[in-house]
Image (cartoon, rainbow, N blue to C red):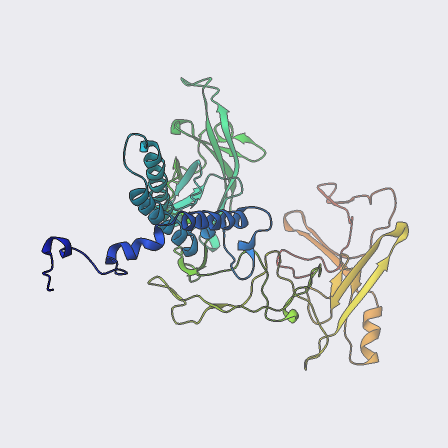
Length: 454
């Protein structure tokens, strides 16, 4: 018995076990438990990144909180969760009035995830220090180049050399300076005082923000220049003005960069340092450090980070710059150790005084800045023979010469150390009392500003 297949019953039917490509692709996401697993993963990931022992600070990761939550595993998990919510909502939850709340919640989560990715992907955190005012200084001694000085106490600029050397320094700022005279009497304004030092004179110029007509100079020990000189300004050619400080640089938070420039230049070239550690110490050898506290012990763990040039005009463009170590809390220090081919005598001594006071000294014989201590009372000298010792034991002769040609004064006398006692040494008069001098103290090896003893 033959039969004819029914076209109506066979058309559109697919063999069993064969699925359409799109549902098969989305099938892994059509699972509530898959979404639950993703949420558990995200909960654990966020917990270990922001609470308790911060795994993100371990040597393997060295990540800030922002970097941890911007890392690809976190972003991938959020993306998979959004796909899972979309598939489950569309395929399992019928769209009607009763399920409208569920649809809104799932849509809100997806919108929140997308918005967070966009926000944190475009977010840049950092600092842009803005000072209240900047002072612009113009003078013929600057050769036509104005000088800018931030209105911050202690800010200092040195311009020129020799007879044209001028030092500008902010000595004082006052945000509520009262105007005591004129049409603006009683008003409060911002005041900045600039100290001016030249080879021939020094004075202080006071600037009032918004009131340039009240600019005046003050002479140390004499008060306002208008009372001493009859004019408000000591130097009419020296012009100073205050303006709002404009900041053009933004320092990105949690980033590192090496700034380089040639001596005399004002513009810096920066070299970003990628993957610089933050939370752990890295050294190649313990010989490179002197640990103050060694608990836990500092173990060698070298790093090697290349810092290539990133900007045109980098003065170290051809140099191979690398970061080979990092210490979170350290300061440079120089210590002397035995060994070497050159003769370099060093004496380490300790002095115990009454009252339990104790002081240690390290003297270097061949270094004029380090061969004496205690204001010259201690000195370490290296001799090659016994004959060189005798002159050192003989006190040197100290002489004082005073000359005043207009009064006919010309003395040259040997002076001795002043006697130690409750009374100060008396004065010796010269030229019938026109001058007098008194030897109060003699110091051997007094260090000068550059460290050289005299």
